Image (cartoon, rainbow, N blue to C red; front, top):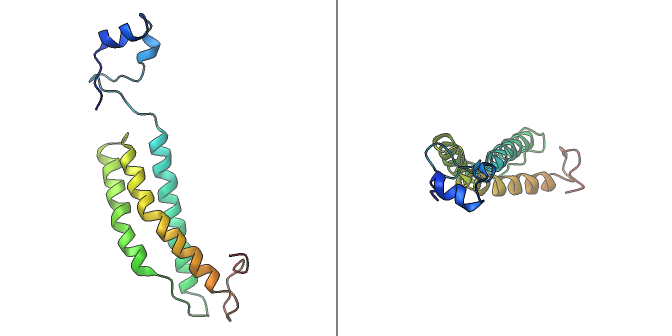
Length: 128
């Protein structure tokens, strides 16, 4: 991490303390909460994709989404949540969760579109 002591930080902006508001007590530069928001959105995307896949699984058409992909992606999502728990300001956590959530969401959308034209067509499948 980029470490700045308080004297160097003050010299950076000619004595204004506002420029160094992101320097913590341990003199490490803290990241904004943007990575935490991205993490929450990525987890919500993953959960929504799993919900869509479960809805497709229990339709009368008997379509089966790619659960193996969702299971493999869960390791990346779990690792991302663990990294976020250990280091809340780390942008790596959101990246790991997105690495698992994106292909799961893509597989859910593909399975949703494949249900069109069958006996248990899911609403909106003709759009996909």
